[in-house]
Length: 298
Figure (tube, helix red, strand yellow):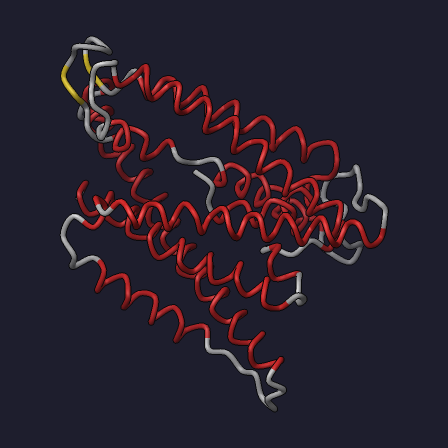
């Protein structure tokens, strides 16, 4: 469940301040957990234990809300998946560019230009090639690698934030909402606040694929009971991890927290590069998961 959304949490809290920020970052996991509990019981109908299986989110919508709402919910789900895939592409290109720029600077090259469009096209080409392999989602080692890399870049970001915080021995930031730069227009500040809330909500989203994950479980015990326990432990653990990086990152950078916390560090460059490379590897696999769910539904 830990994803690249964690890297935007320090910036998000910087837009909300020390009062609203912690409230938001602790409220969204509660909402996610409640939503997950409801979805877990939607896996089978009409009985949550012995009923017919709803293997996808759209199957559950069809069973509980009827055909009329399938189109509306389908558009919303597919739009979210498409938007996330676009975000993954952009984030990967940023990480590739950061690695190249870091290597270039330490080689003392005269020019360190980067071409983001080329990196995005290369990433897209790689995903097209990977999509040709059948049953790629069933390869266990790929899931292990994706999980490991997500923890690597998260721990790198957390460790660097702790180190930066320890150098100035003070908590930076403000208790006010949108208190970032007096020369920024009020409308822009409001937009940043909503963007920050969206970032936090996105960091906790895994519910849109919950039923697809639940469909891989075997019974007994009943799938909904197992998935509820897994969701509780996962969301609780993730909340602690997300809160730690969000709070420490904001305390370290204050109102100047970058949109991707890894881009706020230059040294040690090898450790920062490890974080970026981990992001790239993780998103290669994560993109396949989302694209597979989208293509299967279509």
